[in-house]
Length: 172
Image (tube, rainbow, N blue to C red; front, side, top):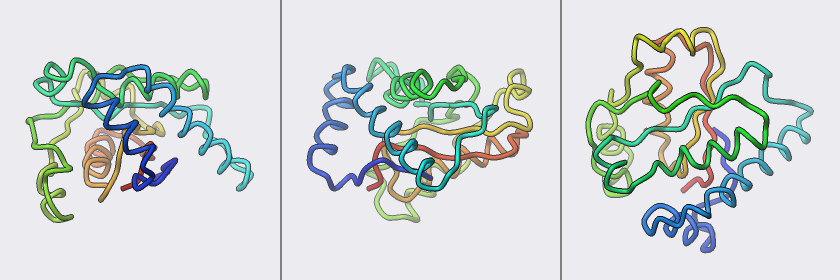
């Protein structure tokens, strides 16, 4: 998992809160820029690159949460990252949440967070061919324990993804 900044950074925490909970969608590009700059810096430092066949995929919200919020913050960030890094972005319907979980921030410690998202993601069989034998790069806003990314990666690998990486704006 790569992250751009620490969630403890007050400006980052405020920006993410404003973005997610006050519907300030204009912050999506700024938050994506943190990730893009971090990826480019790390790639240059390690003389590495993102493989050309990699595909971006935003961590999905449950339909009820998306309806309530009006948008998926990870999708907006992923869209900007895809453009900046010239990578394809898979449609949101590839990976779905099977149940509406409580927010991870309210779930408590590591074990409770892991249980909260245990087997919550699935891949639709009709679109599994899009990820088969591919590198999938999951995009999310915040990772604390990595439980959400880990369960999404589990579902992707079970459906045939070769590798799964995680990119997040902030690590908390």
